Image 1 (cartoon, rainbow, N blue to C red):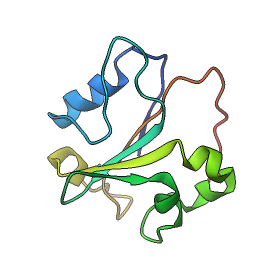
Image 2: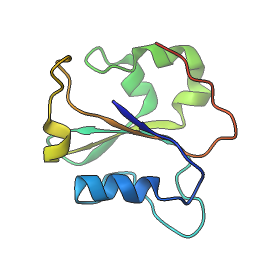
Image 3: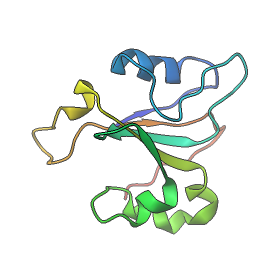
Image 4: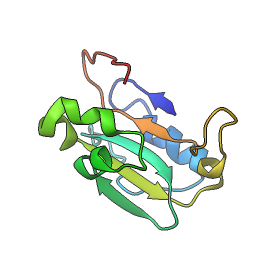
Length: 114
């Protein structure tokens, strides 16, 4: 999983869009801060978004540990699924596909190892 952090309006969404070669579900680009949620961009057969609470309870997703942060966090978390060659690349040390995590700007966000 690749995690992108940064100030608002510095190009995190545009960078992911560039890597993917296309827009991704849930992406919004504008002059003002537009991303107000954490987005896990992952491979899927069709373009769709999945609410964070659904991802956190899904047995086949790596987000089960996020339940401990509660609905306040999960309501600001979502999955973005799309068919992209970049996201189909499997890591040699894992059986999962490549994932990109996009996070909005926060002055302080503690990193927890799940």
